[in-house]
Structures are given as C-alpha cells and as structure tokens.
Image 1 (cartoon, one colour):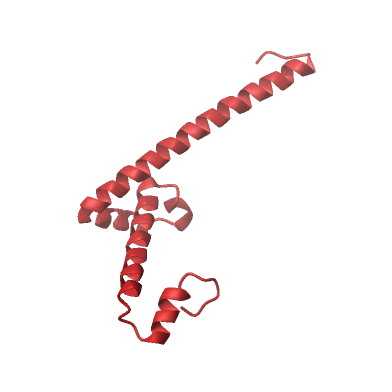
Image 2 (tube, rainbow, N blue to C red):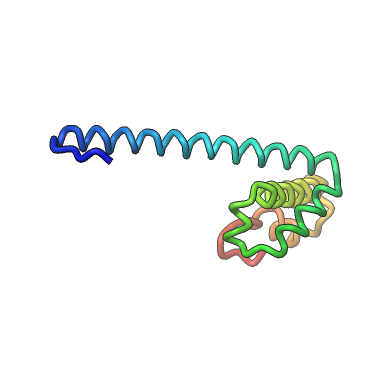
Length: 114
C-alpha cells in the first residue's frame, strides 16, 4: 500500500474505506432481507418448505440460526402462526374470563404468568 505522509490523505482514505464498507454491508443486508422474504413466501404456500426449514434450524446453534435466512424466515413464520392463533382465539371470546385475561391481555408482557 502507498505510504501517505499527509494526515489529510490518511483521513480521506479512511473515510473512503469506511464508505465502501458501509455500502457493501447495506447491500448484504438488503440481499439477506430479500432471501428471508422469499423463504417466507415459500413457507406460506408450501408446508414442506416449513418442514425443511425446521429440520435445518433445529440442528443449528441459536446464534448461527439467526445468520441463516431460511431460519429467520422460519422463526417469523412460526411466530406469525402463533399470533394468528392467539388473535383468532381471543376474537371468539370462547375462553373463560380468567383464561381470556391471561391469554389475550397479558400474553407477551414481560414477567406475566401468561
């Protein structure tokens, strides 16, 4: 690498490298998000895609699973199903009063017994 003697040139080079790294990271984030969306769309229409993702993600450590677009999509899919089920159950008012309070009003609150 060319040795720079001027502090101004050093600062400019560092800024240029930082901007290039930021641009590459943003592009990578967009690609990751696009892959997650594609996997979620596949899971919405194909139960075998859900099973494949579950099998893949079950064997991975949690930190590694969050680096895998298919696992992120699977977690979002399962969470969406859970939210839909809770919403459907709470909207029908088919629960006893205490169960309705515990499941529909307290669910999701930190520290709740729900």
